[in-house]
Image 1: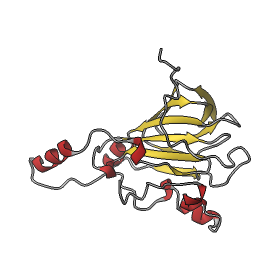
Image 2 (image 1 turned 90 degrees about the vertical axis):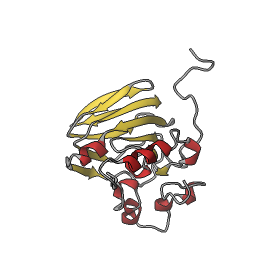
Image 3 (image 1 turned 90 degrees about the horizontal axis):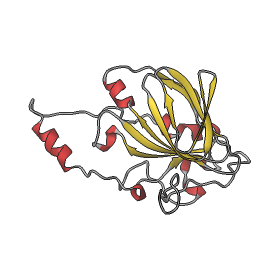
Image 4 (image 1 turned 60 degrees about the horizontal axis):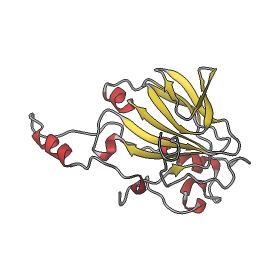
Length: 212
């Protein structure tokens, strides 16, 4: 992960777009979703039998360690991107962990692809095309095709966390390109999110102590 622009370490001052010296526009420009160099679909070059590509895929590690991938963005919504096409492991799906500070709301946007949010801990809700859907740990929240949606942490004193699996790369690979941000991911600190930092250490957040 050395040199990966997504990896950022340290305390609140190390998350670049949250710098007190930046304007709101500069903070928004620094968000993951605002980056101009994102790789939605990676190129595959080589001979027609793609043997070199298969050899490369078989050489790629099959386990990605959470400790090697830090959270980015904030101060309300943080993301840890485990797998996306730029990593060279997959071409058809994108998986990331979302951490919502107390009282947080996400960006509001819409896209052609579907997405599934497995809620690891906390309580919150979705707004899909103006309709509210509540969720809590253990639930699956589904974002359907062409849905304008936004995610919210319903608690004002506890964080929430969701594992997100989506097929955006496959849709873009098939030239289904339509997506739009309606409201940017918040870059303002709220009274509820003041001082919150994403929990870097992984835990069995949605499992009882000692197992079932």
